[in-house]
Length: 377
Image (tube, rainbow, N blue to C red; front, side):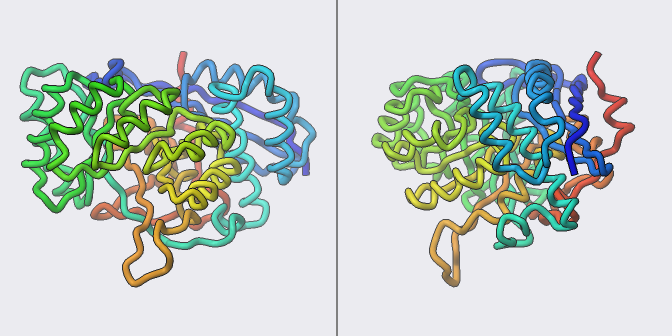
């Protein structure tokens, strides 16, 4: 069996209402899917996190290296592509593009052996996983505290055990928003905050001290991703856990984070940090260093499926016990017309719990009509 075709699908959809994180507004959502086909007719699907058109161009540039290769040699292909682009591609879009390729190859491998990816990774440690709701973004409204409280309460009503709030819009405004959301969801629901590296360490520490008593599950990306020392300063100054890692790449990029004990929670993105092959290695390293690994998930249903296959084999954060501390899944609740539409059978939650797909490969089927409907012009 040999790879004979590599295709990219750049998808885009307009949003009914724009929303913002700390550094930009979204008026559209995009996805970039990778399709790899073999001479035996098997097809694998992956997704790249990041700038869709740029990632598409990079995958198309890498494609000639893949044609004619055995798709089951996932480790060899990963190492070969990484080595070819090492001089210019240790981070960023090259690794994001390699991630989508790697996920597609694992999907192919699972289909070839008629097994879900998690069985090929050693077998599942769990068959379902609790999810937390990611939402609570900025809106073009004056009543930001009121709508955030209402939105957070709606996630709790849907059964989510935890929610994540976007901050980074100004320390005082953020503190008011955090207090409003905590009041709306009550003391028993988890509350995390995510600044998308909007602050320096001084501002992040100030915000953290203003809201520490509100039992914050973690403070995500308080400072820029390359500022490892800044993460350490924030972690040393606050009692709440510090999380980051979605903007870091490969086990080599994570190495300094581990060595400097800069975080409590590492968040590699399966569609960005190197794919399933690399993120399994990163998760194993995190366990060695006593750092929790909770993959970042922000994409279509393909990204969700890939993350679920990985999370099926990520160990609990405590040794086997009667009450283990388990990993949780990021479940994006913002508007994303493409997310579920590309799947023949969408991945849904039931009262905040998601079942891990057990079909071959990623356990999903792609709706090709949706690819045409959302194809970017």
